[in-house]
Image (cartoon, rainbow, N blue to C red; front, side, top):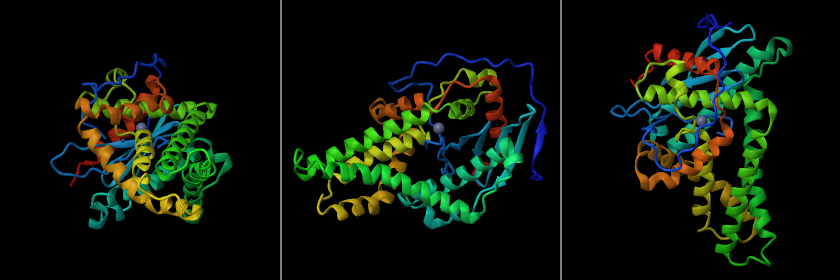
Length: 341
Ligand SMILES: [Zn+2]
């Protein structure tokens, strides 16, 4: 076990209070202040600007929550015996390099970095909760393979299928603008169905409740309230900087960017979109950051609202014990003085 690991007794007094889902604020809600936070619940947190408020982000795990600081991340897990285990691990240094801070580049860096940290944390949580029997630990090589396969699957589903699908309907929808719009529509529908399908999986329900807990606790911190289940419970579980919103913005930005591209021949159509994905991710990240900072601008609600709405599917209302876990993770990050240097 990690030397940073410490145990906290479980609070048995707190009953699991499952609250009703709050109504989603479609208009800019004053309760959503400037903030931080993928489908897996990976929330982006790369904001190290000195004068701006610290934007924490995290991710839901199996029976746990991970929160990111500036140089380390903290995982709090509810173990089968009911106790909360808090583990801290250092973050890689490469995303801190100057070149990784350039606007547009930082979006891709944030995405890759959060994918890696997210996967590591998720595997750790699986290991701690189920692992003793399976004893499976992935090495760096297996992790790269898994990551490449996941990215490949994502590209096939969100670039390959819509592009080829639109191409085969050229007889009905001719011309590059119509073709590109159709391609974008396919991408949007596939993304929505994908989220819907995942949200229906039984095993993922608790992960989504921890995702809701993570958001609520970050809101509590941002509102400068005491980090308790009582204060966290009152917050909404939809966060503007959430990775779910990020992915949706990626899909919407790709529609706008790709509309300027040609549609012939088919191989180039697919390749050009794949090559431009880093640009799309870079623009989307800047938009997400911007929307998180300007939550109260009514004219930005159109950008934020769809992502918040989608979080109805990727988060569930957490119980108090799940909130406690998210609090433990954030407290772990705060305890190490994880402020921007
Ligand atoms: Zn989120």
